[in-house]
Length: 100
Image (cartoon, rainbow, N blue to C red; front, side):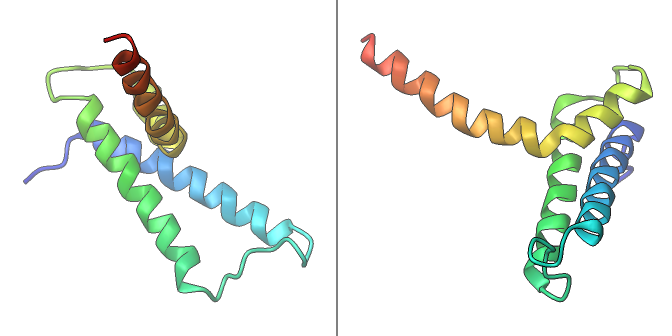
């Protein structure tokens, strides 16, 4: 299976966000610094990268040719997009059930 360029660029965007989070963590005061020795810390990074790739796969198909920055931006914002969808979609469903 060949991974499309759009998915690779989404993964690159997601990796960039994770690197920025690591840099922020390194420069944070000691009382707010993440536990870099924790496996859970790195699992979150891995899961966020996987989410970036999945979102790129779901959003884009091989026939679309968009600007590379669009793919990168989707990967960068994937955790936020998915968090927003997870909170918004159930609310929309609840509202539509009240109308029936």
